[in-house]
Image 1 (cartoon, rainbow, N blue to C red):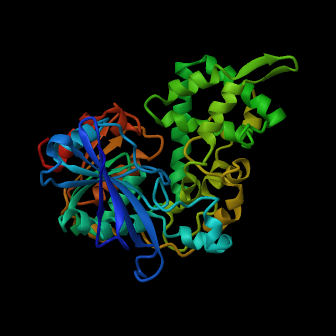
Image 2 (image 1 turned 45 degrees about the vertical axis):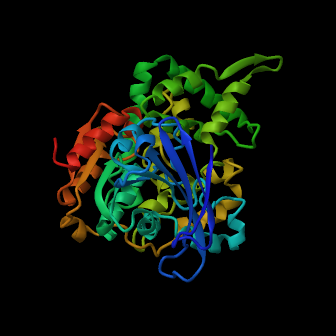
Image 3 (image 1 turned 120 degrees about the vertical axis):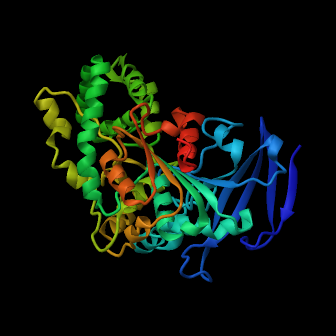
Length: 449
């Protein structure tokens, strides 16, 4: 039975419908809240945030501490769990959990090729998107926290980019936190995007080598697909232009716990015989389009490099420029030299905005962001050095997405931060490890390990 309550909230402009309902073992409440687009201009334009509150059914009426979950990305809405899945099961033992769709993601005011033209041209769109980084996300959290918790601080759980947000939280508003838990998301505090990618390409090369060691038959399969793409460059059914470089970017799968296996199964079904000769199978093309399209998360492509930007130095398509320093990733050169094709990982390139129909209208906007030189600082080393908030972080030994050495350097810069360094999990350890990962990190924040 649905419980529909029209409730006033001091952080909402007007009466909104709040919906509470049940799933196995949990009670869910959907919140729609308004916050300023620019927190330095609170009387200016506002945007909407969506957040889903989750509480264990047998604790629905208890007064519990809150945990706010910040998803990885950028550009992804919070997990859509069914019942007490994965880490949520452990969290609900102690907390009332808020799954926040960060601004521009999920059900929060969308930012995509359909909505951004409302802002004006590329310059105006880029100015708007400059408000969609970790600093604004944390200020959103602080704007809505008093109305939800009654003013009490909460625990933040930050996965990947959500961990970047958590470190900014510790830098800018530690009074809002009772504890911070970071999984695979301790950022470099002062490194430029160039430093991030310069460290990333060798890690990706190691992941590809490990994949080929596990599945040696994939060496030939990947080469055959790349050769076909260099000759044909097919356009997929949804309009995505599949180039060799785009195919290489499927290496992003290799950063997940089951990613190597997923890539293997994808490659084994690539070709089919037709009356016109060998062609890419419909099944392969459909799977690839789903993996490569940014239609569901365009912010990832638009502000990905901007997540590292601080000060007056532009990102200037960092991943593309740094890739030129690693010629072994050049598909045409690799095929000419009869070497194994190297996949790439978590990176966005100018051609991303040419290949993907969900991004093509935003190409000039992306150029504006890449050239921007007025980025606010994201972290305060002096404040982190005197941190008093209990903090624990999982650092994955050879994390493909976030450099472990960068993470450990940051861990040493945050007073009291305790790390769990492990090679048991990949970057998605909080999902793959479920309650066990979160349980260990919470124990570290309480000095129980």
